[in-house]
Image (cartoon, rainbow, N blue to C red):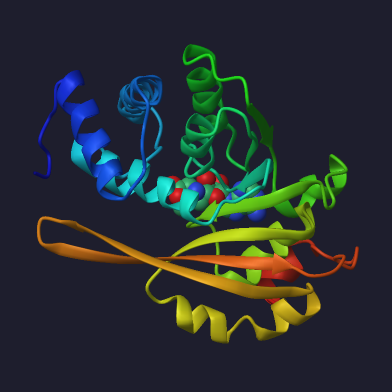
Length: 246
Ligand code: SAM
């Protein structure tokens, strides 16, 4: 299965099947957009470092299906910020799934955002905005305090640091959606102080797994509710966050 190169029809068929195994239904239009996204990802990855996963089946399962698992915890939220989106995971995949919700993709690395601009232009995606900069700075520079119903993020930072980056963007009553591997319990133990100071509460832990070549990957999505305003002292600057995580 690994490293298998699929034709366009085979790719879409496999993606559709893997999604429906997870009770996620993808339309023809969504399958076509995800296929084109994959083509651009592989093409651009030869010039700039976007992903270590380059085989078709890996992209289907470890990127697309993995990101689509967030749909299990997304309810009525309409506006999202993906903090540390990289090559668009999970934010761009979710924007393709939810054409009527609004997604802002934020990253500190501009070359990845140039790739994302190309994808949204070529695929004619209308519900995505892109912002270049560091999460802990952009929230003030662009005046985005408490502006989104939810944040989403995958593979960006340890939980206490990530919550300081993301929760200031989220409205009171909204949530930080955090995609993590199976060592999440350790990170949760380290996050008590961050949860208190940032007025957050872990409401839900959605666990899932996928298997590739007999290897099982256990994953968790945390839903962290924002219970009250963020003190405007937060986020602190990068030096302070790194030196003394909450
Ligand atoms: N979320 C993507 C994924 O799961 O494939 C990318 C993960 S990559 C390991 C981490 C990304 O987060 C990088 O693109 C990096 O530039 C970005 N990042 C890390 N810290 C950041 C910060 N403070 N503000 C904005 N982007 C950040």
